[in-house]
Image (cartoon, rainbow, N blue to C red):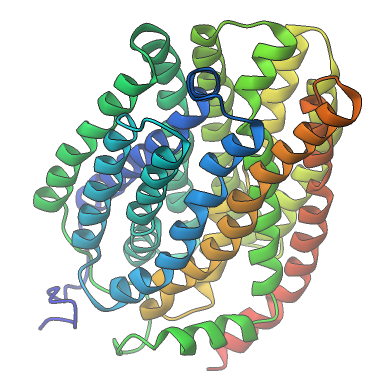
Length: 430
C-alpha cells in the first residue's frame, strides 16, 4: 500500500535510516543559514563598496527576505502535506543556493535586494517539509530532541557562515564569497534527492491517513487552539530580538571594539554558532525531560531563560571590555535559543500528521514576518535616528532597546504554557 504521497506504508523505519535522514536534513538546514547569514558577516564590505545605510542593510537581511520567505511558505507547505517532501526540499535548496551565487553579481542595492528576495523564495520550501518528516520519524516523547538536532543546523550554518565568510570575504571580497557559498548547495540537493527516503506519514500516530486539509482549514484549526497564538507570537518576539540584534553584531564589533573583519567571522562563528548549537540542543533535551511530567515546561523554560538573559545582553552591549562582551554574549545566545525545537514539537503534537508542514509554515510566517522582517529594520532605523539626533553612533542604544523586548517573549510563553494543557486534553478527546 501507498499513501497519497506515493510512499510505501511500512510499520517502522530502521534507526540507521532515521539518523541518516536527520543528519542530511540538518546539513541542509545549515546551508539554509549559511546562505542567509553570509550577508550579515559581509555587511561592512557591502556598506563600504555600495554605500549602504544601516536601514538598507536591515532591509537586505530582514524584510526583503522575510516577505517572500513567509508568504510562499504557506502554499509550499500545503504541497508538502500532500506530496513528496524530500523532493520539495531538494528543489528549494537548488533555488536558494543558485540565488545566493547570483548575489555576487549584483552591482547596486536594488540588484542585491532582488537576489536576496530570490534566496527567500527558495528557503520558503526548506523547513516546514523537514519538520513534517522529522515528526513522522520520531515519537512524541523524543520529538523535541530530534527537532533540536535539526534546529541546531541553524547555528551550525551561522558558525560556518561567519567563520568562512569573514575569512573568504576578507581575502577575496564579497562577490566571490557569495559564489563560493552558493554553488555547493546545488550538489547537496542531488545528494538529498537520491539518498534520502521519504518517511511514511503519521508513523507514530494513531488513526488512518487522511487527505491534507485546505490552507484555510488548517489556519482556522491552529488559531482556534488556545495556546498556539501565544506560541507563535512568543517565537516571533524571540526572532525579533535575535535577528534585530545579531544581524548588527559584526558592525557593533567593528565600531565599538575595533575588531578586524577576519577575526569577527571566527569570533561570532564560535560565539553565536557554538552558543546556538548548545542552546538549541539543551532546549530540546531539557523540555523533553521536564515536559514529560508537565507539558507547560515546553514553553515556560525557554520563556524564563530569555527574560533572564536581558541584563546580560545589556552588559554585553555596554561594556568596554572585549572579553566581558564576548563571554556575556555567549551566555545570552545559549539562553535565548532554547525555544524553537519545543515550540515546533508542541505545535505538531496538537495537529494531525497532514497538518504538520502547514502548521510549521504558519508558525514560521508569524515568526519571520515579525522577527526577521521587522527586527533588523527597526534596530537599523533606531541606530540611524540616534546618529541624526545626537551626531554620535546610535547602534549601542538600538541594540539595548531591541534586546529589552525579550520581556514580551517571556510573557507570551508563560501564557502559552498555561493554555497548553487545555489543548492537549482537547486533542485526546477528538
